[in-house]
Amino acid sequence: MSLIIQKENGRFFMNDEKGNMIAEITYTPSDDSVIMIDHTYVSDSLRGQGIAGKLLESVVQEARSKGYKIIPACSYAKAAFDRKSEYQDLLAN
Image (cartoon, rainbow, N blue to C red; front, side, top):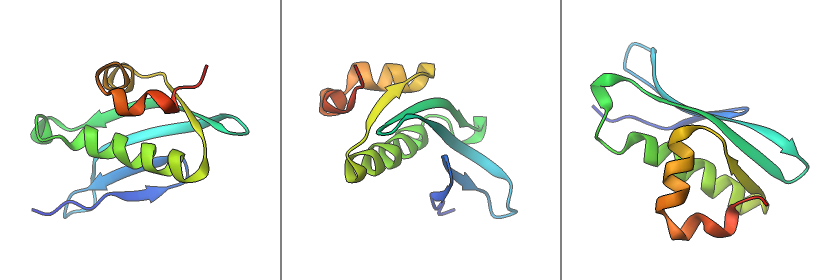
């Protein structure tokens, strides 16, 4: 099963072959150049496969390309930002 990360306004997500959402990360603009990651979800069947990390990386790449900073508000994003030194330059003050 090859899962493709899709993008809609304010979220990156994956659907299964039936079109059911099985993973997502959502974010909202906090101000002009800051986004807040407020929710990460991965279905139980996909846990432990690095899916949340791939979704987070999609948000990180978008933020970098636009020159935005990130507020990691959800628990997964907070933990990932604590772990990954390569994300530190994106942290909003």
